[in-house]
View 1: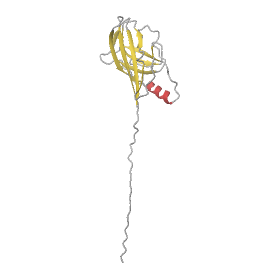
View 2: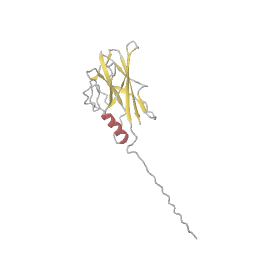
View 3: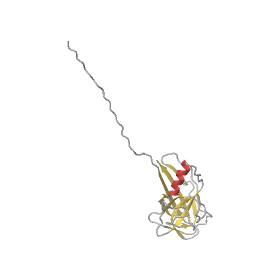
View 4: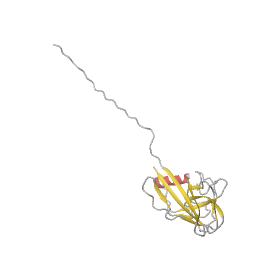
Length: 192
């Protein structure tokens, strides 16, 4: 009699391949839109300029969202003038911005308030003052080179948090004259 024996073995192997980087990021983008309206009520020129959210603006966003930095609820738009190099820089603050000089050739008592509507809940989340653009009542012939967003209301003031600044792209600086109204809309978006 023959006895046959069979031996079987099951082998299971598995592996896991994982990336070493996180896939999450956030991008902060903004844009200033300008509309210059003459005394006759006609639009003289329009312009749009993407902004630079400066380092203190980024720190404010992170701090107010995730730590104990107090939220700023009132923001102001300011203008800056012509220059050889109107160049906002990431390190700019309200007390130090070598690339640009404020233009205060308007009759408003302070920088003009930027009244935002509630931010959208979509991706990107958008906040804008398009329902009520900041209106500057120009009272002098001058040149406007760009705009900035700050928590400080005083014309030529150095206090407050600078959030962002934008320089006019082509064709560059724009002229305004007394009795013009310069309407400025700021749109900010934060995307994941």
